[in-house]
Length: 132
Image (cartoon, rainbow, N blue to C red; front, side):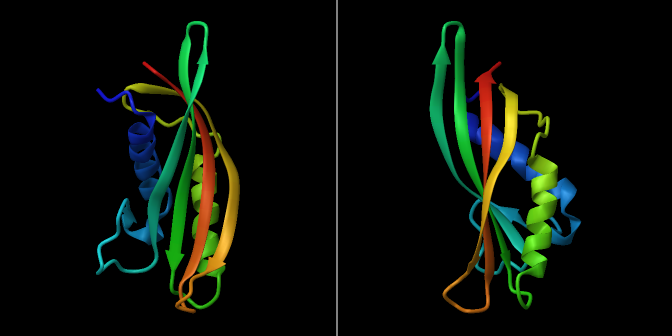
């Protein structure tokens, strides 16, 4: 069993997003293949900070989820981001080896990638966990 909460969060996010966003057809990646079809989602960077107190060895994590679309404009990407937000904010995800105390949506940044055709939304979630 891993003591790294980022691995547990990544797996929990993957399962929740695949279940909540059928338009993705399961296209949720850590590192997308070069042949990945759009739209897709990547579970990106996760920053883990110690959240320690007497009798508590928890972690505060900030996890990024990225939405990628090549549909015209931002509507498709924003719709997918909204479904992800609904699926993860205040969710009670089962995490392997960890208890999830809190999961909250923090922010979303809507971006146009330099190629001029890819819409990108970077979302951040805050999670409080402790090992089982």
